Image (tube, rainbow, N blue to C red; front, top):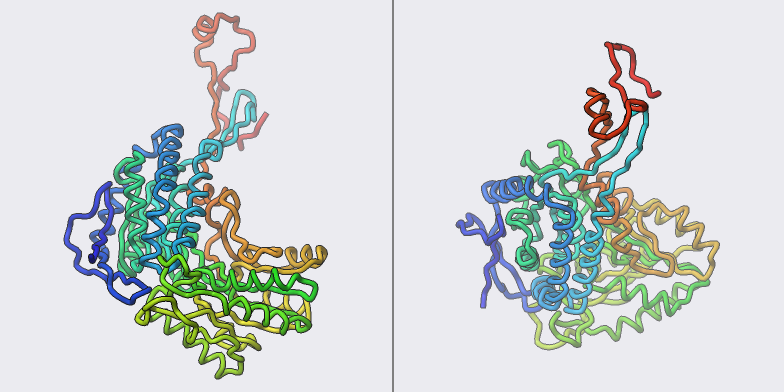
Length: 517
């Protein structure tokens, strides 16, 4: 049956009539599986208004109550993780086990947010001047928005909203219109957990919905994950509107393999990190930088592993890799195989002829592909392909490899494979990339560390989740307090004490600069 997905505003599905809708596809069959409403300015304004109305009550909700709701939400998502994984697989195309892993990694951030009472503790200094105390308070911003990509419809939003909501903000999520169902199911689970209406809202759509959120005066901060051109657009327009912004952009993640590396481990890592989720990961390895001495040997081992990969529908238990998300994206990714060869690369593995399980001729299929002898001038290296295409660049050694990585405009993630501890230590110090793996191909940090790249992979000064997430979703208020004794005898009688030692109000006017003493 064809399904219909609409917005979630003020604790319930949107009941109005959408002026525009989009199709939802099953990437494994190429068929339309449903429709999704697209928000315009009116629907976006309704979601923001609901969040604004809910903010005062949620801000003043005790930390204990907030935490209890977060714990219930965590348990509900855990209980429904299989259902969420199937929703993701049906609309994105990734295999169900991969989708389940995505939900699990998102839950780690929800678990981190359950410790919000400790994370929101301010500082206190007694007697900074005679009878004067100073302390700091972390307070929520108000209404905040998240704009998230198609490749992780559960995990990436969960990098944002658990921390934002735990800090006392209210949230408007604009997920990808390509796979919208997981966001609405998560909204339903929030409601079941006891979250007040309006604290979490979902609007679907395209640029029109995004622009409405960027322009809304009541939206105080915007979080984004997606391509670099859109990240720059989000950053510039949201900042121009006076909002706090964290915009995570694209990537070209390099995996350096030195001559002393364990080549079986490196080949496993290159295949797993290059072709998992059909390469549609911002932390996917897309460029293997191999030392000349071991490049041919490494390439042979990668070929052996790719030959055994099974490509098929995400809900087929035999599948290792599913289709790409849309036909247009599949065709764009495949075009890099042609341009790579045209520019001088060698097509070592052609994913266009990789067999597909079952009867799936109309799906958005492209098997694992590999271009060898790639150079930095080629489009397949310059561009973020975001698909199952691995490029191999050959270098004389460490220095040339490091220079290549640092010269790239992206700085999201990188990995080094070596047995040399001194080389690894030097690499983690010298590489200009935000997330580094040593013999770890996808160095996605745990929830209590921050996620974010450098250079054109991040716009704004805050990374996602972890303590940087708490910083992003709060603002600090510094309070200086004095409680002088304005009625000494009355205070003394209440305290049952003599007048000696009672703080006295400073008398007289003093226009001099205030000093501590």
